[in-house]
Image (cartoon, rainbow, N blue to C red; front, side, top):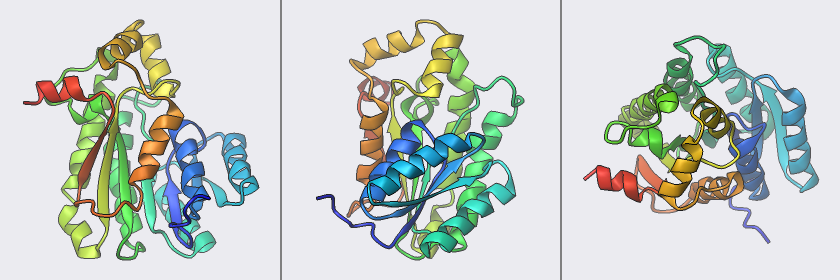
Length: 253
């Protein structure tokens, strides 16, 4: 039987109607957390994730919110408190910037500004002992040391800017008794980012697969994210490097 170590806690997982976010939501719900399943536009997908969680005996609610808008951040925080009594876990999974229809500033707006705004909004209600998890990629985390694919660079730089901005909030987080954990993974098989990247730069994913040995699946990476949730002994702003970071670390020395 799965540990119920998250029983009685409320969680918000951004971008959780599909992919890594959806898989993480299921794993966190299995451990007893009530989960706010966030989606921007596709309600049926989010409702399907919620239905899957409920059929497995968990608790979840779908909430439409664009986190680049202030009211979107507030809606997610309010949903956790209203439905589950508190917000104890915030997993910042939503990211993007390769969409061609959202404007050139969209990557920075989503990957940095929206993340900071959501954390500030969440800190208003998060009790001491709460955890914030920022999900990123090795391509973004190491962008200052290792060049990435041209098509992904704007996303990588904006994701790193978001990570840096959250790390700068450490004194504030310490004061509130809230921990920040950064989880960084390689390109993930089957994600929208990987699909868009391979479309923009054919062969890029295959090259990364060769360099890393293999790439994680959505389910495997979600399991790594979930494993960091409520883990004892984590230092403030700890970075968890998931699989295949050796070549990045070699460039980092």
